[in-house]
Image (cartoon, rainbow, N blue to C red):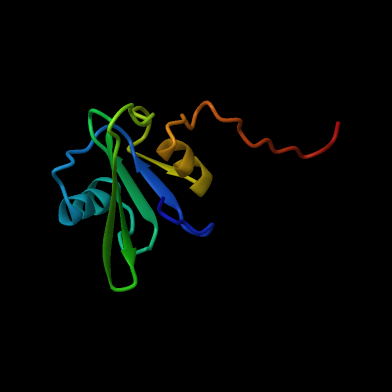
Length: 115
């Protein structure tokens, strides 16, 4: 599992991405299509059409890192509708990697008063 600190943001690209793309191709998607800062140190996650390959691109001090996971059975529960990109936290990324759907998880509630 890739280790992610709490201050790092994780951006999920909706839909499917051509997994023949490597660092340069995915970097172009982050900058041009998603309009995000490629050198922020945040994680940018992509999934293929069959939803059995996931790639995560990020900048680490002096170079790019590309992390990949390929499932031999089953599929990732990858979100495919909505905006072009979704920001998730570390726990939600772990859920995706473990095969759970983000939308089915309990949402955090915010209250302004007890009554």
